[in-house]
Amino acid sequence: MARMSLRTKLASVVATGVMVLGTGVLAATPAQADSTQCPDGYACIYWGTTADSGIRNMWATYGAHKLYFYSGRHLVDNNQTDGWKIWLCRNNNGTNCDYAVYQDHTAVIDMTPFNSVSIEP
Image 1 (tube, helix red, strand yellow):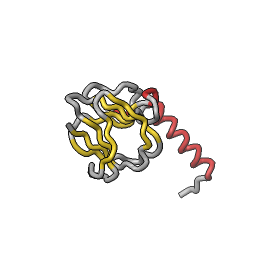
Image 2 (cartoon, one colour; image 1 turned 45 degrees about the horizontal axis):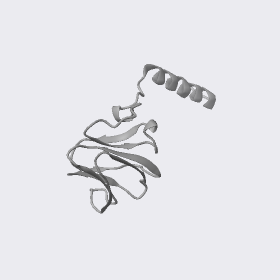
Image 3 (cartoon, helix red, strand yellow; image 1 turned 120 degrees about the vertical axis):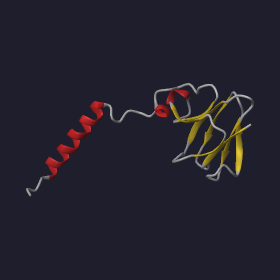
Image 4 (cartoon, one colour; image 1 turned 180 degrees about the vertical axis):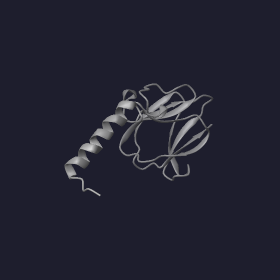
């Protein structure tokens, strides 16, 4: 078996990456797409502090939802209906919730201490 130089290995990795990107294999998931408006009936958290940053997560279902790798300030948009709230929770199972965003409201919040959201009427 012939030994491959570091330069040859690196060139191979770069070429493979270019081919993968060119075929669109690494396309964004729907929640990460270039969407800047939280759809009706959803609770959304954006990548940054403005809607222009794009939606990172969105939920339309009742109950607790875990958050992964959130830190810093993010825009939280409650576009739910029927008075439902988005509770920001310190535990990862939708408990120890101490901040709510009410229907038709948005807030820029430091998400660092929160590990889940709970969507409730």
